[in-house]
Length: 138
Image (cartoon, rainbow, N blue to C red):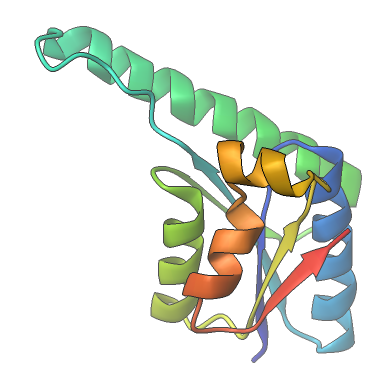
């Protein structure tokens, strides 16, 4: 069975990627999984544990909202979701390899070269890291 993994972050670029991923999954008669990876918030090392746990819960709740919105836009039953906290490109690449996905689809926000250098780009990093084919949707 063909498996397609789509990284979503709530941007219009990721919604376009989700639509393209759904289209490809249908063509391959495969399954689609949407994955949101929330970059962790950096907190001081001396912060008490309770606020850190609350922060993680808030990050996961934010990701769940993004996934719910993407599912509503797709309007498709049977789409799986993954919601995690960590480094986006690394976790998408690891999940694709570990879970046997044949294709990873992500959006590209169209930033310029200087912006990518300063802010980074999940799509750029994923293309270099991922051991599975990556489709970058513009």
